[in-house]
Length: 493
Image (cartoon, rainbow, N blue to C red; front, side, top):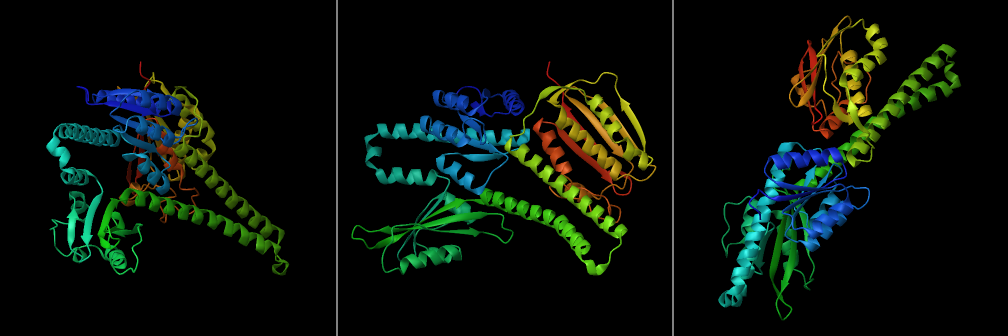
């Protein structure tokens, strides 16, 4: 490794993220090379020996998995991360098998990125140190003769837990990772392993012990080590045969799959929420139409028109929901094309207020603006920033009280254009504020009845702000009002 903190390769087709990440890591003391697509990343990664490579999973030309595989084949010691906002259990397993050290979920904060890079640099140092030690040992004929010692050193250094049990159920071998993963204080050679291992593992081991014929294949199980399901392990149990074909024991490999399970749980929760949100308006429309079709009810034309109007409103909410879901999908997959231009936030605020003036007039709201004369420009997609402003302003109107006020403050600091939108509305409780940016979350109380929405707007807003390395904060007092503070980076000179 060089005198610097490390050599980093960033492979990502999103220019803003790529350059922002490069600037952040260079400020931390790293030497950073960037590739704007998979082909360029594959060329850089295979011709240069980087300490750490961060590879986007979804790119338009070459998939991140292909880039990862090529880099690991050319430079096995390069520590690689897959960065993606669309992770799944299957892709996580595939990336790990190819050689990825870990996942970096998008969008990530500067702190999360630097922490993962530091872990990667530490892993790289361990690999290189182990490689140097191995080279030194190979020079020593005495060490070369001691194969048992070498194998023991390798097994003890791997991240997976290794446990070997003989046919009497006694512990014959273990490494330190096994102690850590099982949450034990210690293990002792010769003690009864079946008395300390989880029941799911014991069942497989006993099945192998009592089998009439040795089957040279692994039996796997997943288990949680506590009631809160905070740690998940995968245990692979494999028979060990003697030269004569009899059973010598069982080797157990323990892998930490907590992160993969977390991703799977989040995916299942999201699918469940989507199904629920789609089912409600569809069922309502179906109910109204069945009533209208039932001639025995003798509905008046006015009543039929009312039911049709309600159906139309439900279908509109359904369309809004689908459009919001598509926007979230595009943001995660990076398939939404951005047109990055110089954007004046003041112009967007004025045009948005004109668009919302009818809603403002209905509630007889007062708008008070405070802005500096010259607002620095930001580099962004005009439509995305317009969506951020219109969504926050719409909420300030919808959740405001009649004859209330909206205060708009536009200012700048050294690094950010700062927009504050404050309302005198119903406000939020602290428990509601903490869930505000979650998908489908809408505060439900006596003050929010009759206020429509998909519960996805602010989630999209946060994703957009995060994609520009911006900051969005919320301060609210129940019954008094809410203040949104949005900070977007100023164009670099």
